[in-house]
Amino acid sequence: MIDTELLPRVAKKIRTLRSNKNLTLAELSKNSNVSKGLLSKIENSRTIPSLPVFLGIVNALGVTLKDFFDGMDLLRGKDYLHIKKEEQQVIYKEDREGFSYRFLLSQSMPGSSMEMVLLTVQPGARSKPTTTDGHEVKYILSGQCDYYINEEIIHLNEGDTLYFDASKPHMPVNRSSGPVVMLVTYYLK
Image (cartoon, rainbow, N blue to C red; front, side):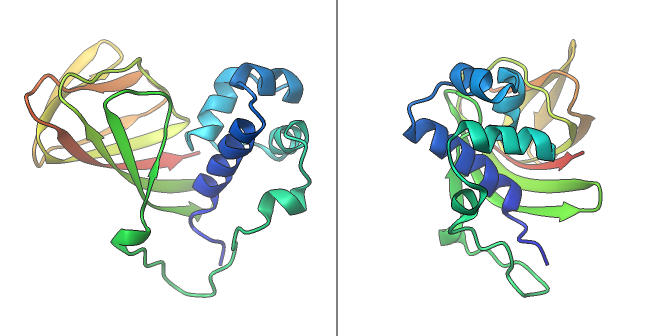
């Protein structure tokens, strides 16, 4: 059984190595021949790199595959995944002020993968629209926000669910006086 946290672990490792080497996304892009936009999506677990792209990134980071995967337990040897609250990690996706993500889990499936996070959007927070290679489901646990998909605005309240093709530009905007907390499920191609 493959570790269901592999994609976010790879993304985090790329981001950490790049940061430790004081490389900007533009510099890593130039050195790896991978576009800055694609690198950003990979570092933010928004897409899965092909093997040649992944190998180019690892090579540009100046590490061997063995060193890259050192410390990542790829196999758990169980039929389930149990992640305790205290083991959940805060992850960083893009540079979005007022947005915080708590990684819950991810799971590889034939031809795709799934990732779940808790997203908290603070009052007044907004960002540039993003795109992801796949689909997303948002379930509003508390609060309310407007969700922009292309030119449409969908008002979401506690208990509402939104499913959409994430290749379309999208973003939440919190105009309320309190934070909005949503369970986000990414289905990546």
